[in-house]
Structure formats: structure tokens, C-alpha cells
Image (cartoon, rainbow, N blue to C red; front, side, top):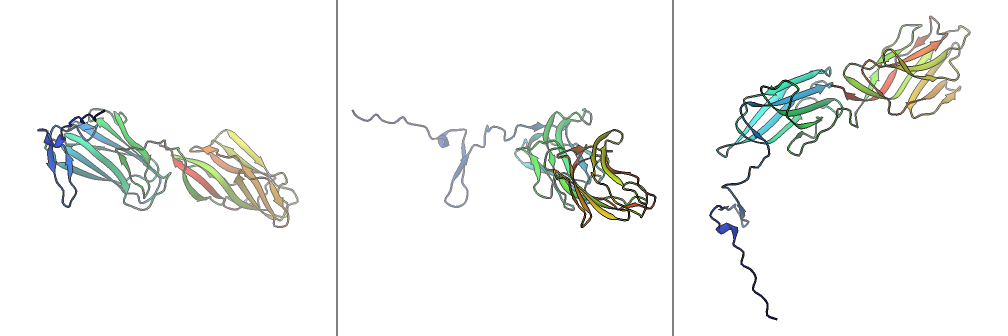
Length: 300
């Protein structure tokens, strides 16, 4: 059986609505420059705006926002803004108006200032209308933590909750309480903590009574967790206490160290407290400043 001739396919380069652009070297690239589809799904007009929301707890952060627009005449217009957020976790809001008419090609934001880590600076960006209120973005472009690297942006957005893992690992130095008083560590405003460990020590005077030590966790009012010592601290002794998430109770009389456990993955919201509650605490007994290892997130 004789082979049938192949169907003839018209070369698209011969079509009237195609043009050829040749680059230097031996390679040739052909693309359509007339009646082409738009390179972006997001068309903006002067009555539109870009809203940026920042909640930051790191110092020295300076954010740079870069945008690129394809205009009606085919040119690309860049726009750049610098945002200096507060450091207490409160909202820093910036509405960018005066946008050109055309297609939004890309938008990206990065940190130009001191290095910040995941869990410290949460940024969300939305496309909206100037007539809309502050929290009425019609399309969320991206929402995630900004770090020194990488930069986040749109297209190919990344949208996450401010409480998504992992958080920022930080060592918190507590305050030394007055003699005869228990220590207290309070979760600051606009932060969420997962306490990984707490270490401190108790120096008791010679009064002949055993001090019954408990670690108490509450929400500022209601107690949620109590962890006992199962032994207490003897008179005229300096005993080191260490509570660790997922740890086990271990008491060593030789080096006067007590290890105990903490609940795993227990998120503490602003105002929550980690504190000691010491039975028979004497006026001259002294708790040292606690050192707390936490994983923390911004809470907008």
C-alpha cells in the first residue's frame, strides 16, 4: 500500500497577524506582537489601589515594595515604595493609589533593613478599589512572612496564616522577682508563644520547711495547667529547675537539679502567663530570673 502524502500545515510565520523578531546569535525566537493575549489576569485602573498590611515584631525592618505594570502603549512602568513598620506587632497599613491603567505584571516585597526571621514580620497584600474600606480587599495577592530571604510576591502567590509553622525561635530573659515572691513571665501583646523550655533556680534560706514548687500556666485569669515538683526544695539549698516540652520528671539530689515536663505544642496567646507557685515560700527565699525558650508568631 502506497504511503499517503502528509497533510500540509501552514507555517504560522506566514500568517498576516504574526511578526518575526530575531535575536542576536544563531537562535531565532518567534512570537506574536499583534492581537496577543494579555500577559496577566489582573487589569488595573486609576480608581484601583494596592493595600499592604504589615504586623512586625522585629527591629530595624525596612520593606521595599516593587511593582511592574504593562501600559496600553506596550511600555512597562515600574513603581517602588518603602514601608517602615512598627516593631510592637501593631498594624502598619499602606494604601498605594495613583496606579496606571494597564496589566499588573508582578509585585514583590522584601526586607532592606536588619535581618528578620520567619515568625517576626507578617505581610499581606490585596488589590482593591479606592472607594472600599481598609479591610475590603477584593483579591488577596499574597500573605506570608517576609524574611531577609526569600522575597514574597505575585504572581505565583504564597498565602499562609500568621500561625503556620515554623515560628521564630527566641530565648526570652525574664525578670528577677523580689525576695519572697514567685516569678512570672507574660506573653506580650500581639504574639503567640509555644514554650519549649524554662530554666531557673530557687535559693532557700535556713527556715526548716520544704518549699512545694509548682509551675502554673494560665490565660491571665483562668489556670489551664499545673505541673508539680513531686519533692520540693529543701531549706538552705539552691535547686535548679528545668521544665522541657515533652520531657520527663527527673530529680538529682547530687547536683540539686529537677527536670520536669511541659505540654507539647501548647500555644499561649497574648496575656497568658507562665509562673511559679511556691508553697511555704519564705521572705528571704529568692527565685532567679527565668530563661524561656519559645517558638513565637505574630498575632495580628
